[in-house]
Length: 445
Image (cartoon, rainbow, N blue to C red; front, top):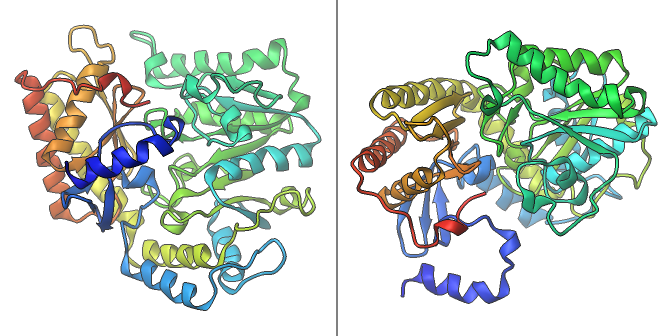
């Protein structure tokens, strides 16, 4: 028995199955840049970036030094009572990066989940209205508020209701909802009609505090909402005094080839949530918003003992340095173009590759049954397992979507090696060489 198997066997009795989406039986020991190493010494090119929480890569020297230096000075003092040095420097720096004009401010949290809870809190406080609208396919987190906002898996509501009241979900305009031969405008009009239906039948707009959307859904399949749809819901919000809020936890911090995914649309949010890669994966999040909204709650309306921690804020300062100094936003855009070309070239050879959605170094690639065009979950599982065997980590979303999100620091050589691995997995599947793992029924979302 190898160290992977031994450690997992020891962990199993003590670890809840609710706390991990199952994929591969590995225990990760270390990482450097875009490569991770398991406890048996196997190296893997990381095409997941720890769920887009390590955009600057693993153990970046500048981030590591910032963490080490700060830990030697002060590991923790709560920002709930006193500012600490890095936290006080980070707040104005991060607020200035937010695509919100005019005065703006933020509040700290420990994860994207509580940042989305904060959107509920501040939106209700500012507007005096109770209701929040979110979208199907969304993943906003695992606290009760953020989990209520989510709609990507039945296991996020199964057995744990009642969920938070006052949350209404409307259909996200993803490509699986498009009708055969439906034009872009007709699709947007139909999805906007579905968006408006609650407001026309049972949800008074004047009692709605906020609309929260992932402009590009992450766990929903890496799906960008149509520009015209975003413009329509944005205008609807403003016409009705509803706050327009965006979740940037997965798709922010340079992932889409811009600082924030909402910048791909030219729209300005009232509130936004940030997390994951903000501190290169250390537990730090923020809700950022127009100052008048952020002043609508008083302490302790949204504070946490460890939020804005000295070490995590040091890591975040260093993370922003790396993104800026190494031009990772431009790199994300350029490498994303190369990845888009690779997948489109392979789609010409392999008819089981369906829709390809690439926004920066950030893609969702559908695996389908070529005969029917329907999602093929078994084929997807076979392919990701072959990729793993060949030395790279990629996972699936929505049963049949390849999630392609490497660290933005991945080298040209590593990216080409990843393409070679993916191409080999596609070839092996096309040749009928792949079979499902024994635990296939447990794998994925």
